[in-house]
Length: 576
Figure 1 (cartoon, helix red, strand yellow):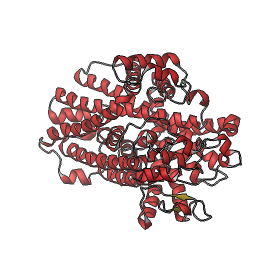
Figure 2 (figure 1 turned 120 degrees about the vertical axis):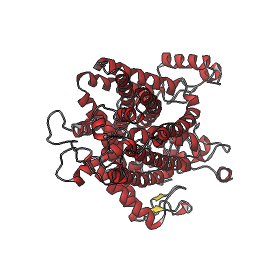
Figure 3 (figure 1 turned 90 degrees about the vertical axis):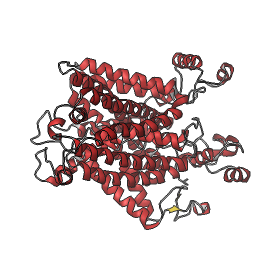
Figure 4 (figure 1 turned 60 degrees about the vertical axis):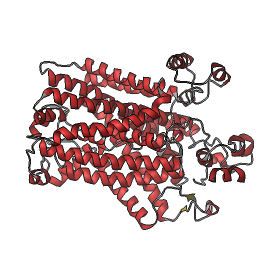
Protein backbone atom coordinates (compact mmCIF):
# COMPACT_ATOMS: atom_id res chain seq x y z
CA UNK A 1 0.00 0.00 0.00
CA UNK A 2 1.35 3.38 -0.85
CA UNK A 3 0.64 7.00 -0.11
CA UNK A 4 1.37 8.71 -3.40
CA UNK A 5 0.89 12.22 -4.62
CA UNK A 6 -1.22 12.40 -7.79
CA UNK A 7 -3.04 15.30 -9.33
CA UNK A 8 -6.26 13.28 -9.09
CA UNK A 9 -6.02 13.42 -5.30
CA UNK A 10 -5.59 17.16 -4.90
CA UNK A 11 -8.30 19.74 -4.36
CA UNK A 12 -11.12 20.24 -1.92
CA UNK A 13 -13.66 18.89 -4.37
CA UNK A 14 -12.16 15.39 -4.33
CA UNK A 15 -14.74 13.99 -1.98
CA UNK A 16 -17.53 15.48 -4.06
CA UNK A 17 -16.29 13.71 -7.18
CA UNK A 18 -15.22 10.39 -5.72
CA UNK A 19 -17.19 8.07 -3.44
CA UNK A 20 -15.51 7.30 -0.16
CA UNK A 21 -14.24 3.80 0.53
CA UNK A 22 -16.79 3.50 3.35
CA UNK A 23 -19.56 3.97 0.82
CA UNK A 24 -18.02 1.50 -1.62
CA UNK A 25 -16.87 -1.26 0.71
CA UNK A 26 -19.30 -2.96 3.06
CA UNK A 27 -18.25 -4.38 6.40
CA UNK A 28 -18.60 -7.94 5.09
CA UNK A 29 -16.10 -7.47 2.23
CA UNK A 30 -12.55 -8.63 2.54
CA UNK A 31 -8.98 -7.44 2.65
CA UNK A 32 -8.62 -7.57 -1.14
CA UNK A 33 -11.10 -4.76 -1.65
CA UNK A 34 -9.43 -2.80 1.11
CA UNK A 35 -6.03 -3.24 -0.58
CA UNK A 36 -7.43 -2.01 -3.89
CA UNK A 37 -9.13 0.93 -2.18
CA UNK A 38 -5.81 2.03 -0.70
CA UNK A 39 -4.41 2.48 -4.21
CA UNK A 40 -7.60 4.11 -5.46
CA UNK A 41 -9.20 1.20 -7.34
CA UNK A 42 -12.64 -0.36 -7.15
CA UNK A 43 -13.18 -4.10 -7.00
CA UNK A 44 -14.66 -4.87 -10.45
CA UNK A 45 -13.47 -8.32 -11.49
CA UNK A 46 -14.67 -11.37 -9.61
CA UNK A 47 -12.05 -13.13 -7.49
CA UNK A 48 -12.17 -16.80 -8.44
CA UNK A 49 -8.50 -17.83 -8.22
CA UNK A 50 -6.68 -19.15 -5.17
CA UNK A 51 -2.97 -19.76 -4.62
CA UNK A 52 -3.09 -23.30 -6.10
CA UNK A 53 -5.02 -22.35 -9.23
CA UNK A 54 -2.81 -19.29 -9.76
CA UNK A 55 0.32 -21.40 -9.32
CA UNK A 56 -1.06 -23.66 -12.03
CA UNK A 57 -1.72 -20.57 -14.13
CA UNK A 58 1.88 -19.36 -13.74
CA UNK A 59 3.46 -22.80 -14.20
CA UNK A 60 1.44 -23.45 -17.33
CA UNK A 61 2.23 -20.00 -18.68
CA UNK A 62 5.96 -20.38 -18.09
CA UNK A 63 6.12 -23.96 -19.52
CA UNK A 64 9.80 -24.01 -18.60
CA UNK A 65 10.69 -27.65 -19.11
CA UNK A 66 8.56 -27.81 -22.26
CA UNK A 67 10.08 -24.64 -23.74
CA UNK A 68 13.60 -25.56 -22.68
CA UNK A 69 13.49 -28.57 -24.98
CA UNK A 70 13.57 -26.15 -27.93
CA UNK A 71 16.75 -24.33 -26.92
CA UNK A 72 19.48 -26.77 -27.95
CA UNK A 73 22.42 -27.97 -25.83
CA UNK A 74 24.98 -25.12 -25.88
CA UNK A 75 25.57 -23.81 -22.37
CA UNK A 76 22.08 -24.87 -21.30
CA UNK A 77 22.97 -26.30 -17.90
CA UNK A 78 24.92 -23.30 -16.64
CA UNK A 79 22.72 -20.87 -18.52
CA UNK A 80 19.65 -22.45 -16.96
CA UNK A 81 21.12 -22.13 -13.47
CA UNK A 82 21.98 -18.45 -14.03
CA UNK A 83 18.55 -17.62 -15.44
CA UNK A 84 16.79 -19.63 -12.71
CA UNK A 85 18.57 -17.68 -9.95
CA UNK A 86 17.95 -14.44 -11.83
CA UNK A 87 14.24 -15.13 -12.12
CA UNK A 88 13.95 -16.12 -8.46
CA UNK A 89 15.41 -12.73 -7.55
CA UNK A 90 13.32 -10.96 -10.20
CA UNK A 91 9.99 -12.35 -9.09
CA UNK A 92 10.90 -11.87 -5.46
CA UNK A 93 11.09 -8.14 -6.22
CA UNK A 94 8.00 -8.29 -8.43
CA UNK A 95 6.23 -10.06 -5.59
CA UNK A 96 7.18 -7.29 -3.18
CA UNK A 97 5.70 -4.67 -5.50
CA UNK A 98 2.56 -6.69 -6.19
CA UNK A 99 2.11 -7.02 -2.43
CA UNK A 100 2.41 -3.24 -2.08
CA UNK A 101 0.16 -2.41 -5.04
CA UNK A 102 -2.00 -5.42 -6.00
CA UNK A 103 -3.58 -4.19 -9.25
CA UNK A 104 -3.94 -5.76 -12.71
CA UNK A 105 -1.87 -2.93 -14.18
CA UNK A 106 1.26 -4.24 -12.52
CA UNK A 107 4.43 -2.65 -13.84
CA UNK A 108 3.03 0.63 -15.19
CA UNK A 109 1.11 1.20 -11.94
CA UNK A 110 4.23 0.57 -9.87
CA UNK A 111 6.29 2.93 -12.03
CA UNK A 112 3.66 5.67 -11.66
CA UNK A 113 4.13 5.47 -7.90
CA UNK A 114 7.85 4.77 -7.53
CA UNK A 115 9.19 7.11 -10.24
CA UNK A 116 10.11 10.75 -9.53
CA UNK A 117 7.13 13.08 -9.75
CA UNK A 118 8.36 14.93 -12.84
CA UNK A 119 8.74 11.75 -14.94
CA UNK A 120 6.25 9.26 -13.48
CA UNK A 121 3.48 10.08 -15.95
CA UNK A 122 5.53 9.46 -19.10
CA UNK A 123 7.52 6.52 -17.71
CA UNK A 124 4.38 4.71 -16.56
CA UNK A 125 2.76 5.37 -19.94
CA UNK A 126 5.77 3.94 -21.80
CA UNK A 127 5.86 0.93 -19.46
CA UNK A 128 2.17 0.28 -20.10
CA UNK A 129 2.65 0.27 -23.87
CA UNK A 130 5.62 -2.08 -23.70
CA UNK A 131 3.72 -4.37 -21.36
CA UNK A 132 0.63 -4.56 -23.58
CA UNK A 133 2.80 -5.12 -26.67
CA UNK A 134 4.87 -7.73 -24.88
CA UNK A 135 1.83 -9.70 -23.82
CA UNK A 136 0.28 -9.60 -27.29
CA UNK A 137 3.61 -10.93 -28.60
CA UNK A 138 3.65 -13.60 -25.88
CA UNK A 139 0.17 -14.75 -26.85
CA UNK A 140 1.21 -14.87 -30.52
CA UNK A 141 4.43 -16.75 -29.68
CA UNK A 142 2.77 -19.46 -27.60
CA UNK A 143 -0.04 -19.97 -30.14
CA UNK A 144 2.41 -20.13 -33.05
CA UNK A 145 4.45 -22.65 -31.08
CA UNK A 146 1.36 -24.86 -30.91
CA UNK A 147 0.70 -24.55 -34.64
CA UNK A 148 4.34 -25.19 -35.52
CA UNK A 149 4.52 -28.18 -33.20
CA UNK A 150 1.53 -29.75 -34.94
CA UNK A 151 3.34 -29.29 -38.26
CA UNK A 152 6.53 -30.84 -36.84
CA UNK A 153 4.63 -33.85 -35.47
CA UNK A 154 2.98 -34.47 -38.85
CA UNK A 155 6.32 -34.10 -40.64
CA UNK A 156 7.98 -36.53 -38.23
CA UNK A 157 5.42 -39.20 -39.06
CA UNK A 158 5.32 -38.34 -42.78
CA UNK A 159 8.63 -36.82 -43.99
CA UNK A 160 7.19 -36.20 -47.46
CA UNK A 161 4.57 -33.82 -46.08
CA UNK A 162 5.24 -30.10 -46.44
CA UNK A 163 2.91 -27.56 -44.85
CA UNK A 164 2.48 -24.24 -46.63
CA UNK A 165 2.67 -20.87 -44.89
CA UNK A 166 -1.06 -20.27 -45.18
CA UNK A 167 -1.87 -23.70 -43.71
CA UNK A 168 0.40 -22.96 -40.75
CA UNK A 169 -1.24 -19.56 -40.33
CA UNK A 170 -4.70 -21.15 -40.31
CA UNK A 171 -3.56 -23.54 -37.58
CA UNK A 172 -2.29 -20.52 -35.65
CA UNK A 173 -5.65 -18.76 -36.00
CA UNK A 174 -7.50 -21.91 -34.93
CA UNK A 175 -5.37 -22.07 -31.79
CA UNK A 176 -6.19 -18.43 -30.99
CA UNK A 177 -9.92 -19.06 -31.50
CA UNK A 178 -9.86 -21.99 -29.08
CA UNK A 179 -8.12 -19.78 -26.53
CA UNK A 180 -10.86 -17.15 -26.93
CA UNK A 181 -13.52 -19.82 -26.41
CA UNK A 182 -11.92 -21.00 -23.16
CA UNK A 183 -11.42 -17.44 -21.87
CA UNK A 184 -15.02 -16.40 -22.57
CA UNK A 185 -17.50 -19.26 -22.59
CA UNK A 186 -15.59 -21.31 -20.02
CA UNK A 187 -14.26 -18.36 -18.01
CA UNK A 188 -16.01 -19.43 -14.81
CA UNK A 189 -14.28 -22.80 -15.00
CA UNK A 190 -10.82 -21.29 -15.61
CA UNK A 191 -9.57 -21.60 -11.98
CA UNK A 192 -10.46 -25.31 -11.93
CA UNK A 193 -8.88 -25.71 -15.34
CA UNK A 194 -5.66 -24.13 -14.08
CA UNK A 195 -5.47 -26.67 -11.24
CA UNK A 196 -5.88 -29.42 -13.83
CA UNK A 197 -3.13 -27.77 -15.89
CA UNK A 198 -0.80 -27.80 -12.87
CA UNK A 199 -1.43 -31.53 -12.46
CA UNK A 200 -0.88 -32.13 -16.19
CA UNK A 201 2.27 -30.01 -16.05
CA UNK A 202 3.71 -32.32 -13.37
CA UNK A 203 2.39 -35.58 -14.81
CA UNK A 204 3.53 -34.64 -18.32
CA UNK A 205 7.03 -34.07 -16.99
CA UNK A 206 7.19 -37.57 -15.52
CA UNK A 207 5.49 -39.10 -18.58
CA UNK A 208 8.46 -37.92 -20.66
CA UNK A 209 11.17 -38.19 -18.02
CA UNK A 210 10.60 -41.80 -16.95
CA UNK A 211 10.79 -43.45 -20.41
CA UNK A 212 13.86 -41.35 -21.27
CA UNK A 213 15.55 -42.09 -17.92
CA UNK A 214 15.21 -45.85 -18.38
CA UNK A 215 17.13 -45.71 -21.64
CA UNK A 216 20.87 -46.38 -21.46
CA UNK A 217 22.98 -43.25 -21.15
CA UNK A 218 24.90 -42.40 -24.31
CA UNK A 219 26.85 -39.45 -22.94
CA UNK A 220 29.23 -39.26 -19.99
CA UNK A 221 29.09 -36.69 -17.21
CA UNK A 222 32.22 -35.10 -18.65
CA UNK A 223 30.54 -34.65 -22.03
CA UNK A 224 27.40 -33.19 -20.46
CA UNK A 225 29.00 -30.78 -17.98
CA UNK A 226 32.22 -29.72 -19.70
CA UNK A 227 31.47 -29.66 -23.42
CA UNK A 228 30.86 -26.18 -24.75
CA UNK A 229 29.58 -25.44 -28.25
CA UNK A 230 30.08 -22.11 -29.97
CA UNK A 231 27.69 -22.66 -32.87
CA UNK A 232 27.34 -18.94 -33.53
CA UNK A 233 30.99 -18.44 -34.45
CA UNK A 234 31.58 -15.75 -31.82
CA UNK A 235 35.05 -14.68 -30.76
CA UNK A 236 34.80 -16.06 -27.22
CA UNK A 237 32.84 -18.81 -25.51
CA UNK A 238 31.69 -16.32 -22.87
CA UNK A 239 30.06 -14.11 -25.50
CA UNK A 240 28.38 -17.17 -27.03
CA UNK A 241 27.12 -18.14 -23.56
CA UNK A 242 25.46 -14.77 -22.88
CA UNK A 243 23.87 -14.59 -26.32
CA UNK A 244 22.54 -18.12 -25.79
CA UNK A 245 20.79 -17.07 -22.57
CA UNK A 246 17.75 -16.06 -24.62
CA UNK A 247 16.58 -19.68 -24.88
CA UNK A 248 16.61 -20.06 -21.10
CA UNK A 249 15.04 -16.64 -20.53
CA UNK A 250 12.17 -17.48 -22.89
CA UNK A 251 11.58 -20.74 -21.03
CA UNK A 252 11.10 -18.81 -17.77
CA UNK A 253 9.02 -16.01 -19.26
CA UNK A 254 5.46 -15.26 -18.27
CA UNK A 255 5.43 -15.68 -14.50
CA UNK A 256 4.23 -12.07 -14.18
CA UNK A 257 0.95 -13.17 -15.75
CA UNK A 258 -0.22 -13.73 -12.18
CA UNK A 259 0.30 -10.02 -11.51
CA UNK A 260 -2.19 -9.03 -14.21
CA UNK A 261 -4.71 -11.41 -12.67
CA UNK A 262 -4.25 -9.76 -9.24
CA UNK A 263 -7.79 -8.39 -9.14
CA UNK A 264 -9.18 -11.91 -9.65
CA UNK A 265 -7.13 -13.67 -6.94
CA UNK A 266 -8.23 -14.12 -3.35
CA UNK A 267 -5.66 -12.77 -0.91
CA UNK A 268 -3.73 -11.11 -3.74
CA UNK A 269 -1.17 -9.32 -1.53
CA UNK A 270 0.11 -12.72 -0.34
CA UNK A 271 -1.00 -15.25 -2.96
CA UNK A 272 0.31 -13.45 -6.07
CA UNK A 273 3.92 -13.42 -4.77
CA UNK A 274 3.56 -17.00 -3.53
CA UNK A 275 2.22 -18.20 -6.89
CA UNK A 276 5.06 -16.53 -8.81
CA UNK A 277 7.83 -17.84 -6.56
CA UNK A 278 6.32 -21.35 -6.43
CA UNK A 279 6.03 -21.44 -10.21
CA UNK A 280 9.67 -20.38 -10.65
CA UNK A 281 10.89 -22.98 -8.13
CA UNK A 282 8.75 -25.79 -9.57
CA UNK A 283 9.59 -24.99 -13.18
CA UNK A 284 13.28 -24.64 -12.42
CA UNK A 285 13.46 -28.04 -10.75
CA UNK A 286 11.52 -29.70 -13.55
CA UNK A 287 13.66 -27.99 -16.18
CA UNK A 288 16.89 -29.23 -14.60
CA UNK A 289 15.57 -32.76 -14.40
CA UNK A 290 14.38 -32.79 -18.01
CA UNK A 291 17.54 -31.15 -19.32
CA UNK A 292 19.86 -33.64 -17.60
CA UNK A 293 17.89 -36.64 -18.86
CA UNK A 294 17.85 -35.36 -22.44
CA UNK A 295 21.56 -34.47 -22.43
CA UNK A 296 22.58 -37.83 -20.99
CA UNK A 297 20.32 -40.00 -23.15
CA UNK A 298 20.27 -38.26 -26.53
CA UNK A 299 22.75 -39.13 -29.25
CA UNK A 300 24.46 -36.43 -31.34
CA UNK A 301 22.21 -33.60 -30.18
CA UNK A 302 23.67 -30.88 -32.49
CA UNK A 303 22.89 -32.99 -35.56
CA UNK A 304 19.41 -33.94 -34.36
CA UNK A 305 18.65 -30.34 -33.39
CA UNK A 306 19.32 -29.27 -36.96
CA UNK A 307 16.70 -31.67 -38.33
CA UNK A 308 13.69 -29.78 -37.01
CA UNK A 309 12.57 -26.41 -35.67
CA UNK A 310 11.45 -28.42 -32.63
CA UNK A 311 14.59 -30.50 -31.94
CA UNK A 312 13.10 -32.45 -29.05
CA UNK A 313 10.98 -34.48 -31.52
CA UNK A 314 13.91 -36.06 -33.41
CA UNK A 315 15.75 -36.35 -30.07
CA UNK A 316 12.79 -38.31 -28.66
CA UNK A 317 12.60 -40.43 -31.82
CA UNK A 318 16.32 -41.28 -31.71
CA UNK A 319 16.26 -42.03 -27.97
CA UNK A 320 13.06 -44.12 -28.08
CA UNK A 321 13.84 -45.69 -31.48
CA UNK A 322 10.24 -45.00 -32.48
CA UNK A 323 8.50 -42.18 -34.33
CA UNK A 324 5.19 -43.14 -32.73
CA UNK A 325 6.63 -42.84 -29.21
CA UNK A 326 8.20 -39.50 -30.11
CA UNK A 327 4.87 -38.15 -31.38
CA UNK A 328 3.06 -39.32 -28.24
CA UNK A 329 5.60 -37.56 -26.04
CA UNK A 330 5.42 -34.46 -28.23
CA UNK A 331 1.62 -34.49 -27.85
CA UNK A 332 2.11 -34.01 -24.10
CA UNK A 333 4.13 -30.88 -24.80
CA UNK A 334 1.49 -29.77 -27.31
CA UNK A 335 -1.33 -29.91 -24.77
CA UNK A 336 0.66 -28.01 -22.17
CA UNK A 337 1.70 -25.33 -24.65
CA UNK A 338 -1.93 -24.85 -25.62
CA UNK A 339 -2.68 -24.31 -21.93
CA UNK A 340 0.07 -21.66 -21.93
CA UNK A 341 -1.70 -19.96 -24.85
CA UNK A 342 -4.93 -19.84 -22.84
CA UNK A 343 -3.14 -18.21 -19.92
CA UNK A 344 -1.36 -15.77 -22.26
CA UNK A 345 -4.66 -14.48 -23.61
CA UNK A 346 -6.03 -14.09 -20.08
CA UNK A 347 -3.03 -12.03 -18.98
CA UNK A 348 -2.85 -9.99 -22.20
CA UNK A 349 -6.53 -9.06 -22.02
CA UNK A 350 -6.34 -8.04 -18.34
CA UNK A 351 -3.28 -5.91 -19.02
CA UNK A 352 -5.02 -4.24 -21.95
CA UNK A 353 -8.21 -3.71 -19.95
CA UNK A 354 -6.34 -2.24 -16.98
CA UNK A 355 -4.28 0.17 -19.11
CA UNK A 356 -7.40 1.23 -21.03
CA UNK A 357 -9.18 1.80 -17.71
CA UNK A 358 -6.48 4.38 -17.01
CA UNK A 359 -6.81 5.91 -20.53
CA UNK A 360 -3.42 4.74 -21.77
CA UNK A 361 -4.47 3.20 -25.11
CA UNK A 362 -6.28 4.55 -28.18
CA UNK A 363 -10.04 3.94 -28.00
CA UNK A 364 -9.74 3.50 -24.24
CA UNK A 365 -13.42 4.44 -23.85
CA UNK A 366 -14.33 1.36 -25.87
CA UNK A 367 -11.61 -1.01 -24.66
CA UNK A 368 -12.52 -0.44 -21.00
CA UNK A 369 -16.23 -1.10 -21.59
CA UNK A 370 -18.46 -3.88 -22.83
CA UNK A 371 -20.63 -2.57 -25.64
CA UNK A 372 -20.67 -5.42 -28.14
CA UNK A 373 -24.13 -6.65 -27.24
CA UNK A 374 -24.24 -9.34 -29.96
CA UNK A 375 -21.06 -11.01 -28.75
CA UNK A 376 -22.11 -10.76 -25.11
CA UNK A 377 -25.48 -12.34 -25.91
CA UNK A 378 -23.83 -15.18 -27.80
CA UNK A 379 -21.48 -15.94 -24.89
CA UNK A 380 -24.37 -15.85 -22.43
CA UNK A 381 -26.40 -18.20 -24.61
CA UNK A 382 -23.59 -20.76 -24.79
CA UNK A 383 -22.91 -20.32 -21.06
CA UNK A 384 -26.57 -21.01 -20.31
CA UNK A 385 -26.56 -24.05 -22.58
CA UNK A 386 -23.52 -25.42 -20.74
CA UNK A 387 -25.03 -24.35 -17.40
CA UNK A 388 -21.87 -22.39 -16.55
CA UNK A 389 -23.50 -19.16 -15.37
CA UNK A 390 -25.80 -19.10 -12.40
CA UNK A 391 -27.11 -15.53 -12.56
CA UNK A 392 -30.63 -14.79 -13.75
CA UNK A 393 -31.51 -12.92 -16.92
CA UNK A 394 -33.37 -10.33 -14.87
CA UNK A 395 -30.29 -9.72 -12.78
CA UNK A 396 -28.20 -9.12 -15.89
CA UNK A 397 -30.82 -6.88 -17.45
CA UNK A 398 -30.75 -4.65 -14.40
CA UNK A 399 -27.00 -4.19 -14.63
CA UNK A 400 -25.32 -1.49 -16.68
CA UNK A 401 -24.15 -3.14 -19.92
CA UNK A 402 -21.61 -0.40 -20.53
CA UNK A 403 -19.69 -1.17 -17.35
CA UNK A 404 -16.02 -2.04 -17.57
CA UNK A 405 -16.60 -5.79 -17.58
CA UNK A 406 -19.42 -8.08 -18.48
CA UNK A 407 -21.83 -8.03 -15.51
CA UNK A 408 -22.58 -11.71 -15.90
CA UNK A 409 -19.16 -13.21 -16.41
CA UNK A 410 -17.08 -10.37 -14.89
CA UNK A 411 -14.44 -10.64 -17.61
CA UNK A 412 -13.21 -7.90 -19.98
CA UNK A 413 -14.74 -9.32 -23.15
CA UNK A 414 -13.82 -6.48 -25.48
CA UNK A 415 -10.19 -6.58 -24.35
CA UNK A 416 -10.13 -10.33 -24.98
CA UNK A 417 -11.50 -9.82 -28.51
CA UNK A 418 -9.09 -7.02 -29.34
CA UNK A 419 -6.09 -8.96 -28.00
CA UNK A 420 -7.16 -11.92 -30.14
CA UNK A 421 -7.59 -9.71 -33.20
CA UNK A 422 -4.16 -8.10 -32.84
CA UNK A 423 -2.48 -11.48 -32.41
CA UNK A 424 -4.39 -12.85 -35.41
CA UNK A 425 -3.27 -9.91 -37.56
CA UNK A 426 0.34 -10.60 -36.58
CA UNK A 427 -0.12 -14.02 -38.15
CA UNK A 428 -0.43 -12.36 -41.56
CA UNK A 429 3.26 -11.44 -41.31
CA UNK A 430 4.08 -15.14 -41.38
CA UNK A 431 2.59 -15.38 -44.87
CA UNK A 432 5.33 -13.09 -46.12
CA UNK A 433 8.24 -13.99 -43.84
CA UNK A 434 8.56 -16.31 -40.86
CA UNK A 435 11.77 -14.48 -39.90
CA UNK A 436 9.91 -11.16 -39.71
CA UNK A 437 7.15 -12.79 -37.67
CA UNK A 438 9.69 -14.21 -35.20
CA UNK A 439 11.30 -10.79 -34.84
CA UNK A 440 7.91 -9.28 -33.98
CA UNK A 441 7.04 -11.88 -31.36
CA UNK A 442 10.51 -11.41 -29.86
CA UNK A 443 8.82 -8.55 -27.99
CA UNK A 444 7.84 -11.29 -25.56
CA UNK A 445 11.42 -10.94 -24.27
CA UNK A 446 12.51 -7.39 -25.09
CA UNK A 447 9.19 -5.74 -24.26
CA UNK A 448 8.39 -7.57 -21.04
CA UNK A 449 11.92 -7.62 -19.64
CA UNK A 450 12.17 -3.86 -20.18
CA UNK A 451 9.00 -3.45 -18.12
CA UNK A 452 10.61 -5.57 -15.39
CA UNK A 453 13.82 -3.53 -15.34
CA UNK A 454 12.26 -0.10 -14.85
CA UNK A 455 10.15 -0.79 -11.72
CA UNK A 456 12.83 -3.03 -10.19
CA UNK A 457 15.40 -0.25 -10.67
CA UNK A 458 13.02 2.28 -9.11
CA UNK A 459 12.32 -0.10 -6.23
CA UNK A 460 16.06 -0.34 -5.54
CA UNK A 461 16.33 3.46 -5.67
CA UNK A 462 13.53 3.95 -3.14
CA UNK A 463 14.83 1.10 -1.01
CA UNK A 464 18.32 2.56 -0.69
CA UNK A 465 16.89 5.98 0.17
CA UNK A 466 14.81 4.47 2.95
CA UNK A 467 11.55 5.76 1.48
CA UNK A 468 9.55 2.56 1.96
CA UNK A 469 8.23 2.15 5.46
CA UNK A 470 7.10 -0.84 7.47
CA UNK A 471 3.53 -1.89 6.66
CA UNK A 472 2.96 -2.49 10.35
CA UNK A 473 3.35 1.21 11.04
CA UNK A 474 1.01 2.99 8.63
CA UNK A 475 1.31 6.19 10.66
CA UNK A 476 4.76 6.74 9.10
CA UNK A 477 3.35 6.73 5.58
CA UNK A 478 3.36 10.10 3.93
CA UNK A 479 6.08 11.66 6.09
CA UNK A 480 8.98 13.49 4.47
CA UNK A 481 11.13 10.38 4.86
CA UNK A 482 8.69 7.52 4.22
CA UNK A 483 6.61 7.90 1.07
CA UNK A 484 5.51 4.29 0.63
CA UNK A 485 4.84 1.22 2.77
CA UNK A 486 5.66 -2.41 2.14
CA UNK A 487 2.94 -4.95 1.69
CA UNK A 488 2.69 -8.07 3.86
CA UNK A 489 5.11 -9.99 1.58
CA UNK A 490 8.70 -8.73 1.43
CA UNK A 491 12.37 -9.57 1.98
CA UNK A 492 13.86 -7.40 4.72
CA UNK A 493 17.30 -5.96 5.42
CA UNK A 494 20.49 -6.51 3.47
CA UNK A 495 19.13 -9.65 1.78
CA UNK A 496 16.40 -7.62 0.12
CA UNK A 497 18.92 -5.05 -1.16
CA UNK A 498 21.29 -7.70 -2.54
CA UNK A 499 18.42 -9.53 -4.28
CA UNK A 500 17.27 -6.25 -5.80
CA UNK A 501 20.78 -5.43 -7.06
CA UNK A 502 21.23 -8.87 -8.64
CA UNK A 503 17.82 -8.56 -10.27
CA UNK A 504 18.83 -5.33 -11.99
CA UNK A 505 22.16 -6.79 -13.15
CA UNK A 506 20.41 -9.88 -14.50
CA UNK A 507 17.80 -7.86 -16.38
CA UNK A 508 20.41 -5.58 -17.96
CA UNK A 509 22.31 -8.64 -19.22
CA UNK A 510 19.22 -10.35 -20.67
CA UNK A 511 17.87 -7.16 -22.27
CA UNK A 512 21.25 -6.21 -23.77
CA UNK A 513 22.04 -9.58 -25.35
CA UNK A 514 18.49 -10.22 -26.54
CA UNK A 515 19.14 -7.70 -29.34
CA UNK A 516 22.20 -9.55 -30.67
CA UNK A 517 22.05 -11.82 -33.74
CA UNK A 518 22.40 -15.54 -33.06
CA UNK A 519 25.23 -16.31 -35.48
CA UNK A 520 28.09 -14.79 -37.44
CA UNK A 521 28.48 -13.56 -40.11
CA UNK A 522 25.40 -11.37 -39.91
CA UNK A 523 23.32 -11.24 -43.07
CA UNK A 524 19.99 -9.75 -44.02
CA UNK A 525 18.43 -13.18 -43.43
CA UNK A 526 19.83 -13.99 -39.96
CA UNK A 527 19.92 -10.42 -38.64
CA UNK A 528 18.05 -9.87 -35.37
CA UNK A 529 15.52 -7.18 -36.25
CA UNK A 530 13.75 -7.34 -32.90
CA UNK A 531 15.40 -4.09 -31.79
CA UNK A 532 13.63 -2.36 -34.67
CA UNK A 533 10.29 -3.76 -33.50
CA UNK A 534 11.03 -2.71 -29.91
CA UNK A 535 12.02 0.75 -31.09
CA UNK A 536 8.92 1.01 -33.28
CA UNK A 537 6.68 0.30 -30.27
CA UNK A 538 8.43 3.02 -28.28
CA UNK A 539 8.17 5.52 -31.16
CA UNK A 540 4.48 4.75 -31.70
CA UNK A 541 3.77 5.15 -28.00
CA UNK A 542 5.65 8.47 -27.92
CA UNK A 543 3.78 9.71 -30.98
CA UNK A 544 0.42 8.84 -29.43
CA UNK A 545 1.53 10.41 -26.17
CA UNK A 546 2.41 13.70 -27.86
CA UNK A 547 -0.76 13.78 -29.97
CA UNK A 548 -3.35 12.76 -27.41
CA UNK A 549 -2.32 10.70 -24.39
CA UNK A 550 -0.56 13.54 -22.56
CA UNK A 551 -3.94 15.28 -22.41
CA UNK A 552 -5.94 12.32 -21.08
CA UNK A 553 -3.42 10.05 -19.36
CA UNK A 554 -2.53 11.14 -15.83
CA UNK A 555 -1.41 7.81 -14.46
CA UNK A 556 -3.66 5.29 -12.70
CA UNK A 557 -7.07 6.92 -12.24
CA UNK A 558 -8.37 7.13 -8.71
CA UNK A 559 -11.79 5.47 -8.52
CA UNK A 560 -12.04 5.42 -4.72
CA UNK A 561 -10.66 8.07 -2.40
CA UNK A 562 -7.71 6.35 -0.70
CA UNK A 563 -7.57 9.10 1.94
CA UNK A 564 -10.94 8.01 3.32
CA UNK A 565 -10.32 4.36 4.10
CA UNK A 566 -12.85 2.05 5.75
CA UNK A 567 -13.80 2.64 9.33
CA UNK A 568 -12.40 0.89 12.37
CA UNK A 569 -15.22 -1.66 12.26
CA UNK A 570 -14.23 -2.70 8.76
CA UNK A 571 -10.55 -2.81 9.66
CA UNK A 572 -11.34 -5.02 12.65
CA UNK A 573 -13.49 -7.24 10.46
CA UNK A 574 -10.63 -7.64 7.97
CA UNK A 575 -8.14 -8.32 10.74
CA UNK A 576 -10.35 -11.00 12.24
